Image 1 (cartoon, rainbow, N blue to C red):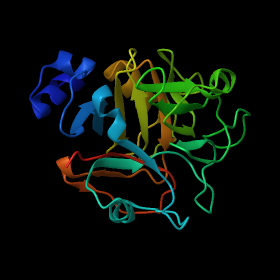
Image 2: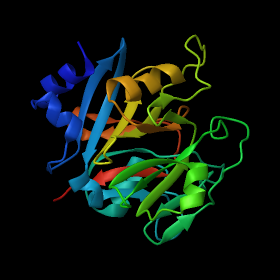
Image 3: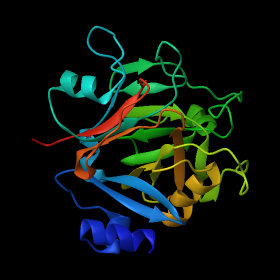
Length: 251
């Protein structure tokens, strides 16, 4: 079963509408699906829903929220979905740039380094700018300084202008439960995905490039990847998180 047929079956809409997703909806569409023999959960957010997308790190006292339960209590509202949204230091501060409205933490990092974050090119997920959604390579972000309502930096990029990251290996033995975000070519749709089981970077990148036809996609993490999605009865527990991204319910 292809990813589009599976999503169509689960969500009850036409596959073409899933690709465009330009129409507003009451909540994020989260669905379990399969691509190339691997299981994933994908939460799709349309341009009309972008204003309800949030990026969080600290509460009003400056303490890291760390998890979905604390975030929901802090907001006092329900979430359509949420997931970890970038790498962080031992004190939960972001490794790279974090921007949520007027709140900014960390700095844009353009130099290479150790670990997945430093596996250039890395990138920034940006919302509310020239397009509702964008994944922008970090050095290009530094040059253009785009306006973003929300911005979180991570790495590596999974898909760069329609191509897989050049360092990804088909026969890699590095497998983790991984999560990330990809954006449609027109910037009108963002796909937040997490694997059900450990996958390689190459497998996860192909989900975005070939399965979802994302023009650009960004890796969030692979050690503490977690998802809150009541639509699919999921509320992951585990290690504390740094940055969290999610969609606030309309109600």
